[in-house]
Image 1 (cartoon, rainbow, N blue to C red):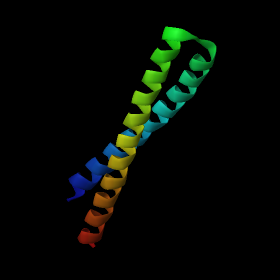
Image 2: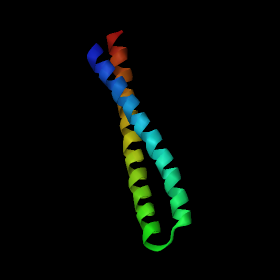
Image 3: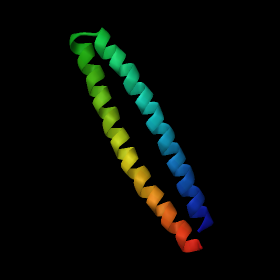
Length: 77
């Protein structure tokens, strides 16, 4: 049970780290969207949408794994 708990904690940590990276990347893309026109603007908007989808996916998984981790810690008590 301890190994599973450690795994969940590291998984959540890396997922949160990835979310932070994506959020900063979205901010950078906002600057590029404002500075570019036409095709380049569309590329950055598409990239931004894909990153937002990944953030939403990661956040839902983080919530799930947090619940799983908490339920496992309650069972161990």
